[in-house]
Length: 419
Ligand SMILES: *Cc1c(COP(=O)(O)O)cnc(C)c1O
Image 1 (cartoon, rainbow, N blue to C red):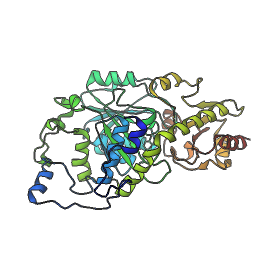
Image 2 (cartoon, rainbow, N blue to C red):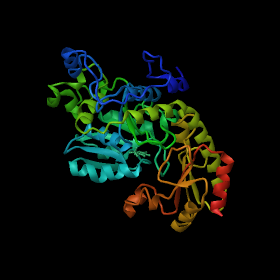
Image 3 (spheres, protein in one colour):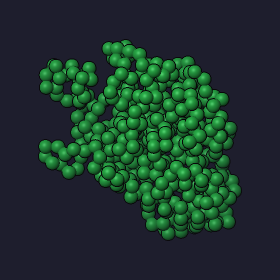
Image 4 (cartoon, rainbow, N blue to C red):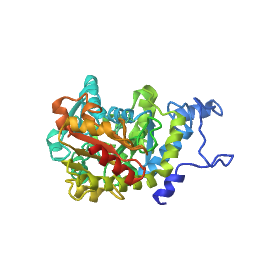
C-alpha cells in the first residue's frame, strides 16, 4: 500500500460497532478471561492487554500506523520525545558504557547526553555530523549506540547515512536516528540501513501543537544485529527481572518489546490514550502537510536568500546549501518546514523575532501555525558558548518553522520584519 493509504488506515481493524474513527480506549486496565489467560499474557505465551502503562489499544493503533509509515517492524509510544530518546539509550547502555552522539542535536538531547546520563555512569562521546569518520576513533568495546538526527535542529544539516551506517556495521553497533524533523514522509532512516528511529510526536505528528509525545521504531529483523553480539549481552542473557526471559530468542521485535516490558514497566513514561488518539488524527494528514510545509519553506528560503540583510540561509532544498547533495540523496518529496538564517548579530535577530505578526515567537516546531525562534536566547540558552558553536547556533541565527498558512502572506510577514 502507498503511504497516503497507510497514513489513513494502517494499524486499525474496526471494532464490533464498525467504528470509523479509532476509539479512545480511556482505561487503565483490562479484564482477563481467567487466571490461565492472565498467566499466559504475563509469560508472553499470548500477546494482549494487561495494563495501560505497558500497552493500550488506542496507542497500539498509533504505534502500528507509525511503524508502517516508517517502514519498521514495530514501535513503542512514549510520553514525550525526550522519554523516547532516554529509553532508546537506557535500553542498550548501563553504567560504564558509552554512546556516540552527533554534536549537532536538539538542545534537550545535548543536556540529556552531556549531563543527565553522565550521572547514571553513561559517557557520551560527540562527533561532528559533517565528519562521520570521527566516529571510528571514538568506538571501543563499551560503545552501545550511535545517535544522530536525520536533519538537525536548528543548524539544518543532513546526516550522511551511508557513511555512518558503514562504520556502525563494521563495528556491530546499533544506529538510532532522531527523525522528528524529517518525519517518515520525507526520510526513511530504516530503509537507509539504520536500526532504530525515534520521533518527538509533539511536532509534525500532531501537526497542530496539541500534545507532548514520542515514539521509537525498530527495523525489520533487528534480532540479526543483536543475537550473539557481545555488545548487547543483556538481550542474549536471561533477564532476571522477567523470569529469565531471553529477548533474542523470542520471535518478536525485541528492542521495542524490551522498552515496553522493562522500561515502561519500571519508569512508566507511557502516552495517554487521548494523546495517542490525537497522533492518529495527525498522521492521517501527515503526507499532505509535509508536502505543503516543504514547498512553502523552499519558497521562503529562496526569498530570504535574495534579501540584502540575510547573510546565510540554511535549507537543504536550496542549491546553494552545503547539504543540498545529501538532501537530494536521502530525502524524498521535500525537506520539511524547518529552516534557519543568519543576520548580522544577536540584536538584529531578536528584533526580527519580535516584529513578525504571523510567525509567532514560540519554542516549538512542526505546527501548522508558523513559528519563529531565536535559539541562542531560548532553546539553546542553557548551552555554554562552546556548546553553542558546536551545535551550530550563532547569536544572529533565526529559526523558522514554516506552517501551512498562505506562502505569500508568510513572505510578506518576513519582508516587513526584516525592514
Ligand atoms: C522536540 C524535539 C525533541 C524532544 O521532544 P519532546 O516531545 O518535546 O520531548 C527531540 N528531538 C527533536 C529533534 C525535537 O525537535
